Amino acid sequence: MNGLILGIIFGVLMIPISVISYKM
Image (cartoon, rainbow, N blue to C red; front, side):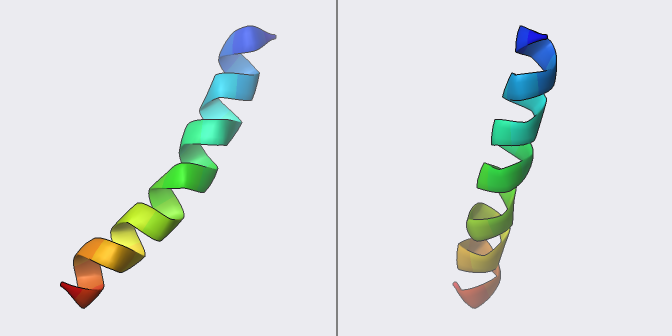
């Protein structure tokens, strides 16, 4: 259960990180 929650959190965080790295 915790692994699934962490997977979702990291999945959501990867979106803005990829967008910022793309703009840079």
